[in-house]
Length: 164
Ligand SMILES: [Zn+2]
Image 1: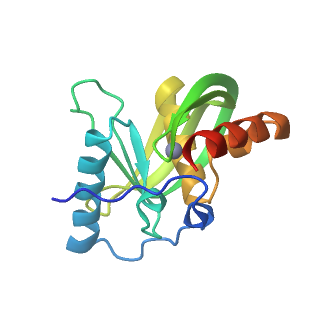
Image 2: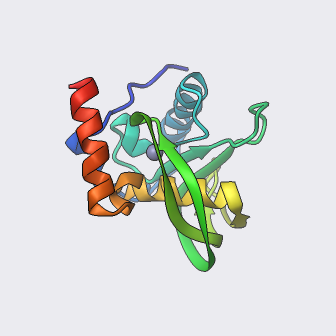
Image 3: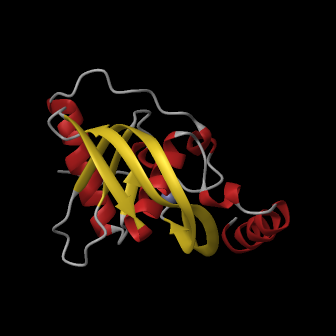
């Protein structure tokens, strides 16, 4: 396995929309394994392929502390949303920044798994938020894009001032 390079905001590649995966083979499995390793070493709970310059609809998630609840989503699609939830979110592509974001509380999604098998998943609270955050990445959206313009500009100023 290898560690992949994570893209940081405001890299334009983070705005690219990912393509559907047409065939799940060894190359895709290797990408997934590398993504898990990259996510764990970066202390994240979710990572989208977009964040590591791979233009494919692949997401890895593990919200457990022991790193033993791996969830792989390939071509995920949310088919039902209910309720609203606000959680403080952060992102491996925007280090040291966090902000509360409004999302759907419960979701039902369809996705392919590591082996290419279609499955349905119901998620709520942290897992639901994490999945929605990662699916946004596949659509070229960051969590700060879901904030008000004034908050987004405030964060942009902090980032420009501190990092660039
Ligand atoms: Zn993120």
